[in-house]
Length: 410
Image 1 (cartoon, rainbow, N blue to C red):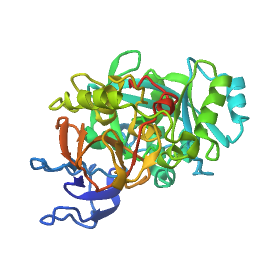
Image 2: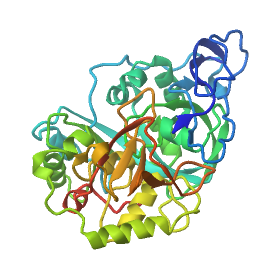
Image 3: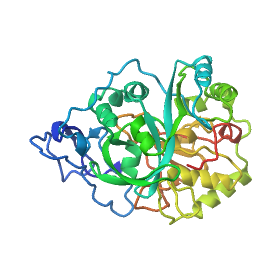
């Protein structure tokens, strides 16, 4: 898998360009300027050429690129507190209703928990496709994001002023247009409004597609205070999950990093692995979807995103998997690429602003072949194993994967 077209990392401020860096890319017959200046209007993302047949392309979007909403182009952006102590996210907790102070305090007191951030949460429909969204306090939530994002003061000022900030993954896969006013159906569903898509960002949280201010979150119908971001980097993820559920009843707890390293722990070893019959059923199900279109948020049976295809295929064999690629990387022990077996899951990380964040998954079929739902505009296909940006593989342990969460519906 490789990028097509230039990768430009830029910060667009107040309608002008203050900095830009261009890097060379896999095509050697095109370059872009190393600096841009004097722009009087927002500069949009460069659009990639369509990939050649059989070519595995991933859209090159900026790691950080923000423009102000029209209403703020002549006014100073709101003040946002500077970045503070960084917190590594360990779990996203979704509650049945607003987080009561006693619940938040109880989670904060759990062993290994270093910090808890309360957010609004819900799923909106952006340009016709689902987008899991969080409404945040920019001054505190920024400390739970990757360093390149946390340190970007202007990004958080624009979020505070009302712009929508898309995750790197969603902006890439859906080829969103930076600086556009996009139709958004509020969670619920609710009314449709046009909102300014002003930033692409490395969020660092699996399954979170859109970051907005709390005020914008109310406009979008997000459930107030119904989400918790928990940082407990030294805690065993499964112990943490059980402990959170014990104090926050009816909560969904999505586990996060460090991903592959945790899955290789001896306590989650080879016992209880997939049977031959289950494996055959899952692979047969996956291959039966060849030619079905890639659909952002698609979980089948007639359209899929990458983790949706994996979840649907293994569900056919009675195996529960979580929803996102990053979560699926916890579904069993890590295996060396040199020892791959059919049914192993393969993982890639594409975000240059958060290189450890897993954002793509495929199923290994054997004989150097894999099956995947690639990206918008393409269909489920079988191709040779792609090593560019490949970060590892996992052999599913059903007993482990069932504890990670589910169902795997977005």
